[in-house]
Structure formats: C-alpha cells, structure tokens
Amino acid sequence: MAYGVKIAKGDAYKRAAAKRRHIRIRKRISGTPERPRLVVTRTNRGITAQVIDDIKGHTLASASSLDASIRGGEGDKSAQAQKVGSLVAERAKAAGVEAVVFDRGGKQYAGRIAALADAAREAGLKF
Image (tube, rainbow, N blue to C red; front, side, top):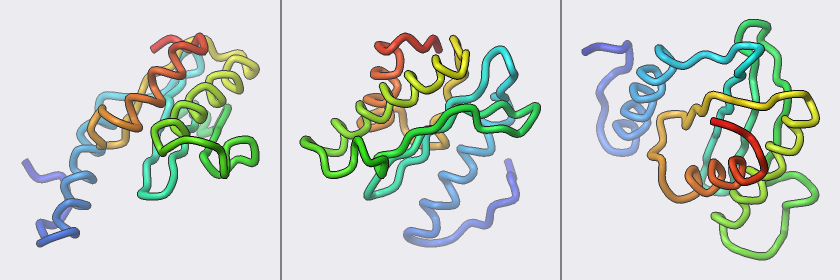
C-alpha cells in the first residue's frame, strides 16, 4: 500500500514508517464538536497533548511538558506525561469536553503515550 511516503534508510525510514502509521490512523479518526480528537505528540525531550475539533479546525485545550507547572518537576518522562495527561483533561473539562477520540500520532501505545492516556482517563476524560 502506498501512502505517499518515500522509503528511505536508517532514521529516515523510521520517520517514514511513523508517517505512514499516522496517515493510516487519521483516515479513520476525526474530531467532532461532541467528541474532539486528543492528539499526542511525543519527542525525545517532551510530550504535548491537544484537544482538537477537526470540523472547525480549533484547538479547545492543550498541555505540554514545557508548561510552567510541569517543567523542571520531579520524576522521569513518564511522570511528566502523567502530569500532562491530567492537565489536558482538566483544561478539556473546563472547555466543556466530556469525551474524546484518542490519536496516538503513529506512535506505539506504550510508555509515555499510555501514561498520558491513563492519567487523562483518571482525571475524568472518556475515550
């Protein structure tokens, strides 16, 4: 199956594979006003979560490990991801969002991605 991403070598191959996975996921997942999309973006240094209404193209709530309340805190990256998950859930609930569709962004649902999702669920956001 061709998704419009060139096959490459090494790290470029990994990025291309992640892009293909993300495209495959986004074909099926879309955020609506009733159930916006919770997008998780993971880098080597940090993690970001956004609640997006794809119909209007608006970000309803967001949180990042670079936020002042989380940055420089105690714990490892998974602990930071948990804090980001609970913070984005709080902000989404304040914006009137009760349920979301989870978009892992082509990343494997494990480690920091799973920690963020579990913390958001515990804070009352429904997936």
